[in-house]
Image (cartoon, rainbow, N blue to C red):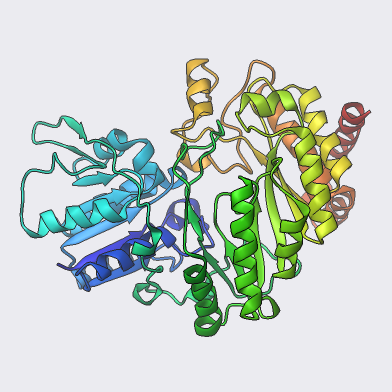
Length: 484
């Protein structure tokens, strides 16, 4: 069986790349299939390679795989559908299997919108399910009702979904991502969206755990079983990326590397000790994510700093306890302040994620977010618009309360478009407060003045100077009212 796994070229639809990281999910699947007897496999990152639809068609005609797998998040749902339709038209006899967050959260929708192109949807974690599907397809079996974790349309067009697949508890059974099967040089991926002080490129991205047991209402992934990899094996992978690909930094994609429990702290310390024992702390810089909980402690953070963890990104989301409780963040403002103080004491740089546009959020709540940022003084702030991803509790809330204004997947970008309103704020007001927070905490006052000066270099700039000056002063006045 010849198998081709594709990351769809959404760049053709939105005119820019949607991700700067390698397709880890496909690389894990490829490695697992190869380990279990299917060596004729290739991973094509059509997005990173900027393949046009015509070039993708040529590649399909050249490879002629028996099975094609494709994946994607909700943001690229339309491109994913367009990809599988192209595959079906080019290779009508091939079996097409789709997985990833988009397919998992809306399996019936993607099956129907693909107009019969998709043979099966894999829901959730894919290794075990995909392997079972490939084996049944190879044997030309016709009954797939006993395969756990899939969805499909039967011959009468009825939607069939099977019982959930159990999670892989022993992650040592899953091989490392199969970078050798990827059509692109791994060192060309940026990893981090932009430069962070102390993190030298190239940057390798990897996972040391799977799953997040928490229940944030804005998340479309849902609660999942948290599982940990063997520490030695994970550090072996880190060392491999340094020696094989010349990685200078490692970005850990774990949902929550620190802040979940005292037991997790013990693992973090042991993980860091292994990095230090091998001298990798002198060769590599590390970046990861954490949870602002009561479990964060100074000794663990100091050990992370000794292992050369330079940055921790913290998902704070709001400075209002009312909003944190509403979105089931299960943290307190006090624990946020304490966590940021401890990280500073340990010498680790701190990024704070904040979102604007939650239901029930008022200007006073946004002011609390601004006050929190000013109080803890993070090294960097990343402000986003709350985006109504399918599968999330907040998406359901907006739909039930008729607050969703736009269902264009490409607009779920979290940085440009407001797709909803709330009972407290219109979409225009959400955008205004978001831009004000960006202006104050990401770009700063000088950015506005430099922008105005640069605009004078063009005729269009002079033409719109009055409007831009008025906008700048309106932001300054509104910001002053909100922060007084």
